[in-house]
Length: 479
Image (cartoon, rainbow, N blue to C red; front, side, top):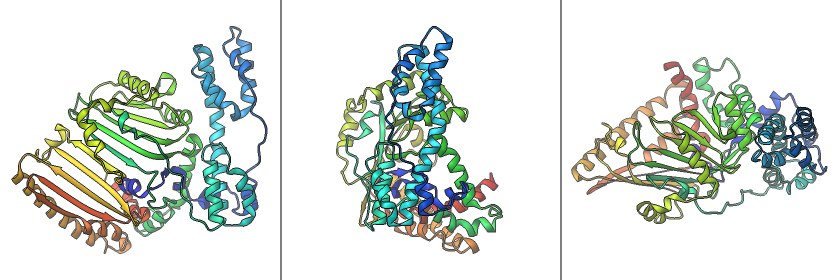
């Protein structure tokens, strides 16, 4: 399912698109009509207040002055959050700490309101009523996160025009990966047409027969999903993933090596950090580094990037701090790795998902691989709505590569047969057809020391995701 979302989410993965509008407004007990949606969008022309004096007083030696300054700032609401973010980096620890406390306090209310506005804008587009055009056009110049884009999309829908997010340009984040990486990968979501992510509504509807048959439909699954998503989004705000890069060192194993994943997109870093902390995640460096455990560090250098560092078997706080500092300085350590630089620069621009490098020793030594392969190259391209994939894996022994390829092909044929049987099981009939078609397209062969696997599919996210949503209750029961 995750792979389907990755390849099918052209234009960037917008998390709020997972939430069906009708379910959101049902939970909020709001009637869905043009007038009702317009009431959710009050205009705000007030100038942003200057609270620099009050921020300075947050560091006063007099407690009453500090407290009064905090209340004065809070009274202005979320409009002063940008000034507080600047203050959270103050050299005065008292000012920085109180600024962060105020941000948390104001963000708690701000995110719910922001989500409500975005859902109202999106719903107006879905209603396709021209009466909403005047208000939506006024929102197009908005500088609030996501508002301008949502308004543009809604206007286009009402006017019957196709809409596509403006392409994001800039150098790849792959160069921000550690110099020691031996295997790197990238997925660019922002510049591919892909499939419209839409919502999970269609996927859950396809899984409903399975849920009902297994007793999982006693409660309305759509309402359950919507309620949980709303709970999260009203704490984190919306987020969008435009690209993902990942790098792994060749020596990764228990007690050595590292894996780094860097997401680029749009999100509210302080709100996301606070949500993780509220969920029990430990924080360092004023919430800019989150640590689910000592082997995992999450760095948030800005509202555009989030990086995850995993170091099996060892504490990585110092490395997480170094990673955060490097990201803030826009360093490009991978450029110092001559081998990886040569491999990356040869990747075709059409490959919107790709991987290059050497398979880590700990993975090569796994019994399933039998040390058959050392280097891999994966590419995914998209043309006329079809994603084509190619994987080449090279090993030291031609006979071993040939035998592995034959064994993998036999396992593929078995999987096809089993999936066809599952597709004929009562309520699951038809749910697995898209996955079956994907497997049918796969071809496996070998030439000398290289195995090549190819396949293709239409990135219909809902069709590919639905079977796995249906299987989820079964897997949970087995566990």
